[in-house]
Image (cartoon, rainbow, N blue to C red; front, side, top):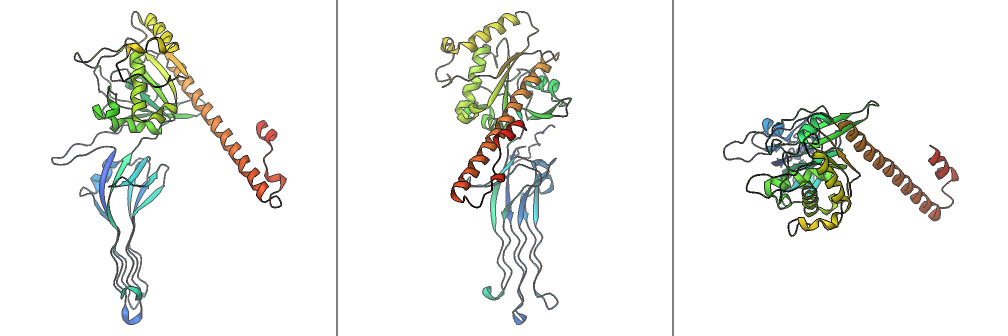
Length: 387
């Protein structure tokens, strides 16, 4: 799945992962004083998660970015209770966070058909309001997309992430031999023979200073927060963005990527990670790879190579360090196996934690209400372990 950047219109700022809207609930319907009839409430405005949707589609359908729900029905002789106004649904992709203009979180939609009410319709006219309706709620909201993917590809520009994504999955990203080929995230799916599917997001290349929003760093780093594991991709021979920037060898590249994540959000370093060392087909790659592995085993001996202020606070361990030749697909099968193993271990750990939490809660209930819980309701640890 490719998420293209919408074209810029003169005088407006557009983005594929952020959108600001004015929403208004419908006004209530008029009451009927002589018969005591009540007007119907105005419709509500909802944000609804719909797979296949995009924020660009929202602006295509509503270019004014002003969305309003329907007006409530008036009370009448034929129908004393007016009908509720029609709700307005904003269909958005999964992974949307909804905030007010002041940054207050209204809600999130992460699963199909999840929805969040963002504007409430006004009350219909009745006895307490002298049969006059009230207007609906109105406010500005911001929709922010954070991609939901099992794996996030992390690396500096031109490390081979897009090529690797193409070999790992069914995605067809734009590929060229120059930095910043990936201007918008690409999402692919790794398929396995047992029908297991693992989603992979290729994020645009970071640059030094991404944590401070250089190169639109915040624009891209936020998507890493919802990845289950991180897949670092580095060029075994190192990286240099331009003749005006410093050359970084593979070890420095890894440590600088770790530091950028740390400075943006320290919690990101709590995620499991795999390191793919790319371009292993070039002359001298094996020696460079051995050197990198040695440096990763003893990072404290090489931290002096890093710029001041860019040394990670803590050592960041990788679950696997694997050599690959992305352009030829060499090492990709081993990489897929390694990534899946990490995800499977996470899943087992999550199940065990959930089971332990359930047992803890049941033990608490037993202490408080010993006569209300039967022995059959308490899970048998031996039977659970067997299953």
